[in-house]
Every structure is written in C-alpha cells, then in structure tokens.
Amino acid sequence: MAQQERVRWAAAARPRTVAQRRAAVPPVPPAPPAERAGREVYRSVQDSDAFQEIRRGYRSFVFPASAGFLAWYLLFVAAQAFAPELMRHRVAGPLNLAWLLGLGQFVSTFLLTWLYARNARTKRDRAALELRWDTQDQLR
Image (cartoon, rainbow, N blue to C red; front, side):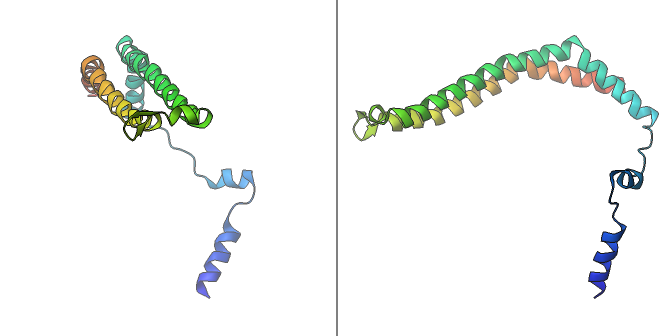
C-alpha cells in the first residue's frame, strides 16, 4: 500500500504545464572562470587554420570513400533485385557472380578500413596530436 501511495503522491507533485515544469527546474549556475577560459581556448582552436586543415583532410577522404562504398553496395543490391539471371551466371565451379560480388563487399570493407587507418596515420594524426598539445598548453 505504501508503494501505491508514493506513486500517487509523485504523480500529484509532477508539474503539469510548461510553466510549472520550467519553474520546477533549477536555474543553471554560471560557469566558473576556468571553464569559460577553456571554452574560449577550444573555440579559438576550432577557428584555427590547423584545425580546419585537419577537418578538411578528414572530409576529403571520408566523404568520397563513403559515397563510393554506398554506390558499390547499392549496385550489388540492385543487381540482385533487377538482374537475377546475370547474378546466377557461373564464374568458376560452384561460384556465381552473386557470390563473388557478395564476398567483394567484405573485401572492400576491409580495404576501406585499412585505407582510412593509413590515411589518418600519415596525414592527420601528427597534426592532431600537435594541436592537442598546444591546446593543453593554453589551458594550463
């Protein structure tokens, strides 16, 4: 019985209107000066040329790679749906074109993962690490 009474009391105490809900939420205290300084540092880093170059390098790889992989996947699905006879064509022994293209999806996934890791390691990681150290120095 006590459990039901608590639930009933909690439901009665719950604010019903938007104004009551807003009044029930305590105001957010202002950020301490150190936190405000941290925000300014991160905003300045975000606006810096070094950060923009890292982001540009990331987008120049990820967007085309994602679009290419999505097109390759949709081509595979469309061929399965609209050209089943073509996909049944035997290539070697019991393997048909559908099996080869399906296995090619796995191969291309691993290839793209390897290419992404290599691209990040050779073109972005060092610059990002330097930017991180500079940011930490500014926050001290």
